[in-house]
Length: 253
Image (tube, rainbow, N blue to C red):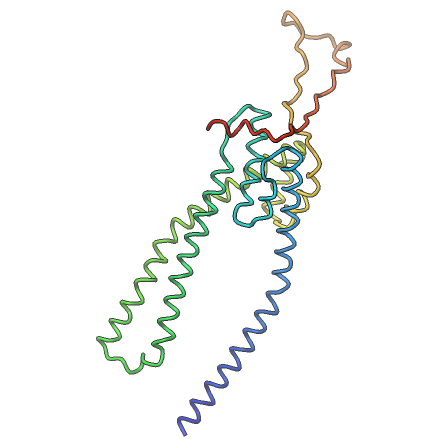
């Protein structure tokens, strides 16, 4: 009688587990499709900007792990051309991305080890005496402690990567549409779906790729008469990408 009840309970549990698993898979499909679409559109926007501006290997924008390198190159190029600064945001973004993936893999391995040990010993838990139960708990503590110790560096790397990512994204927006860069950045942070839309809007623009125009100052330090201040100013110079690709911001750090 007890064996029958146990078997019936296990069958009911397996049926419930299978049903919930199928429901989870079906509910995850729309989010997976949306995430894939967002990634592809974002990659197209970054690739278009990088290719037009002569960035080396613009196709890296389509590779998930290293696509931040292309974004960083666009930001570094903008800083070099407009402000004469040598930045290495591309290296910071790529390094933090690789470190985050490596730590995440280690955490997943530890979590899988913990679950595997629990599943293997679940039938023996009720039969263990106090000493065996204590030894089993100690075995479980090792992967748990490892995950706890990795949590802090994972959190720090996530914050650093996020900060540098949005700085680079702001530089990209600034190089395309300086007047809307702040608005685009804020909306990209608050509503993440806006980011690929703005990248597609900006992909053919280079409005910020020249130093800002400064009108000539009047001679001898006196104020320019009002009737002269309305004279038309010379047109702002236009920026053109250099081909073949030239990346002077990589010459030194």
